[in-house]
Amino acid sequence: MVSFLMSVVALIVGYMIYGRIAERVFGPDDRETPAIRKADKIDYIVLPSWRIFMIQFLNIAGTGPIFGAIMGMWFGPSAYLWIVFGCIFGGAVHDYISGMLSLRHDGCGLAELTGLYLGSFARKALIVFTMMMMMLVGAFFVYCPAIILSGIWGEKMMWVVIIFLYYIATTIMPIDKVIGKIYPIFALSMLFMVIAMGIMLLIKQPVLPEVWDGLGNWGTERLGLKQSLFPALFVTIACGAVSGFHATQSPMMARCMKSERQGRPIFYGAMITEGLVALVWATISSYFFFADGWRDICSPEIVSQFTQGVDGLMHAADGRTLIQYFDAPTVVTTICASWLGIAGSILALLGVVAAPITTGGSSFRTARLIISEALGLHQASARTRFLLSLPVFAVGIALLAWQIGNPSGFGTVWQYVAWGTQAMAAVTLWVCTVYLVREHKFYWLTLLPGIFMTMVVVDFLLISPTTFHLPELFSHITAGVVTLSTVIAFIVWKMKRP
Image (cartoon, rainbow, N blue to C red; front, side, top):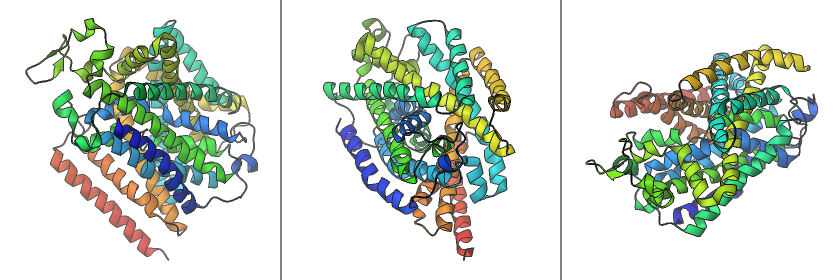
């Protein structure tokens, strides 16, 4: 528990100190913002800062800081360090600089920013890649919440239809009509869940592994985890530390801000808040898997199914290990029901459900904005916005139908999505670095995390069993060479500048 408490304090201090440093490096001023200059009462509209914060928090959260943190803690206490340092020096800086860049460029999206600073080829590649990611996230965040909601009341397909209709509304309607009104309520539900779980941790005070107990891969011997800590940990915990998906969502809020000085609490602050969510669920995961918490909260019938195998691991009657039997969604539902009772668990689960639903809806809206930017189309009428969104809805329905017919496919596809969001983070950090160089600002702020994330995504692409599955040493060396080559290319480019 000491590592958890120290990590919470570190995130708060990081916001107050390093967040201020990032703000001074960028230098917000009093220039007119896009929400005022391009006001259209649809996408460009001034909203209260507290409402923008709530929307930004939900847009970037999804289930990432919950499920990702649970799975990330399978690697052991090193997850604390990644969440804290990744969030303060990587994710929050990434979100702040990219969000402010969008604010400075009329609220344009990540692909357009990439084109401005990395060239037209990179822009075209990002348009295709980002559209693919948005539709995958949108479609795959329909069925999982539907499953959870059907466990409370109703049928799965009923909830699938309701959620998808909600997606259509959030994609087409003016941002203040649906998103601006509903998201703050969902945000409160999400925050209630996190606060309630944090309080329960403090009440129970379980004896947990601490950072100083060892930073190696605890999951290999204790849980049968097959992946190596590097680079898997840094992809598994994405939204709770660094995530390029956030750079696709921030432009929506950049179009609603009345002042550049709102940037630090909205962009940097929302990421720190997400880091706190990840810390709570990582600690719960540590209790569940490393302190035998599963024995305390599961029924005697479930506990009796597990026996220790010849490999030293706990196996269920059907042969599954602990992390195979208790996947992340199961941990969430089990813990909520055990710690908070019926009423509390419903509210907590609604918080978990709200995150993917709101993120999915925002992803579809982002896809519409990407298409309109790429084609230079105006969207004054609801009919135009609907027609522009039809391809997005069609692909989303096709992906949803595939997922319903292949329920196990979610896990496989999501591994590619997790890598994809980290790849976007690396690109975004390089975009921010080029901007800072051009403006003669302190570019090391984004250069160092950009180098690290480049190494992570290249290494994971080479080493992961779901991609090339190359030998570990070869993957590390090749990723190092690619990263070094990228740094050299950057140095050469910078030296040629006047």
